[in-house]
Length: 253
Length: 215
Image 1 (cartoon, rainbow over the protein chains, first blue to last red):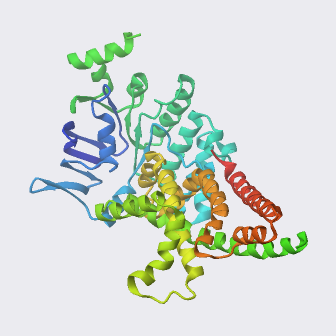
Image 2 (spheres, rainbow over the protein chains, first blue to last red):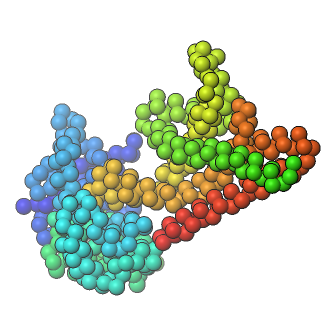
Image 3 (cartoon, each protein chain N blue to C red):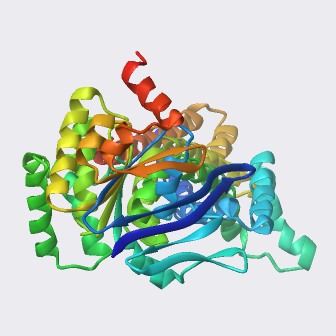
């Protein structure tokens, strides 16, 4: 079954139509990368899926539970308590980490599981420590975000999202704020998640990385999905717009 | 009149000044928080009313506001204002300072990056939890320097209570100075203010250092 299913999603900001007609799904255990030029709507589709933005048309659902749909041409969202349940299905990693600066690393990881999910404190702390070991940050539990490098902060942000045990993780350009060295350490962590069969949707500009870890790749341009195929098909595509985009990436310097 | 007698009289007056200071602070900070919310309200009627209120509080002299708060009820409704002087001073100061604090709190809340709200939303925090656990602690740290400024100004503003012929410390100092034709009580008054503000600044400094464990 699809973890996420998006159908005919439309989104405008004022007069600007950012998403014109977007449909795709992400199956359990699948890794989907979304690529495309700036302004193509790839971050917006992620923000719609994570309900940071409201859609203007179409419908989407998580694990068969509808989050939003159209009724008489108007988009309606599920009732609040249902949305709260649906939101438990996914986590999001931001480009700018958005850690809570006034919380230590371990508190960043444990506060939501304890105070939002009302889980057992000892259990949550034990799991959080394990997550930090996986991220290679076991010695950073008690430091504050400002004391960490960007790469470390992003790994904390990934751990924070995982601490809530989501069924699916979204990444919104997770390495765009990092230098190449720090990018490597974050990509390694994301790659390790594919080995755990984590369902993921990743908006990224790291083409080689996307090719290596993805089951499917989506190329967006001008608010539409131009290609939705396997990584190999993507890189061998004859679509002119796609070739121009990939060509610029490789030889644009 | 000996210096010792002056000191004794002025100390008693200083207690009155401190009581105005303390009650104003205790009332105006929570009130300022409420006003800040009203100012940011999506309800246009509420936010516009609050805007006018802030504009009047900041745009007219505190002394005049004290007079209006004290005499207004009598002039408008024929209310008996005997024994109302001290409450009127506290109300006048509190609603004036609440307006200033509200603008400080509003700027603090609006300076919070949107990403903090978004991260909290995706992690499942309720609106209330987001504000109390994520936003408010960070806002408190951000607004501390301007709040310190206002607090120090308030110490000195307590002397405006003389407008309602309330003899707090400085009014008393002026009376003694006039009666005894000496500058000494005014000088002592100045020292009192300075020492009190020094303590206020040190306390605020201490709180600032306490909050300095993160950036």
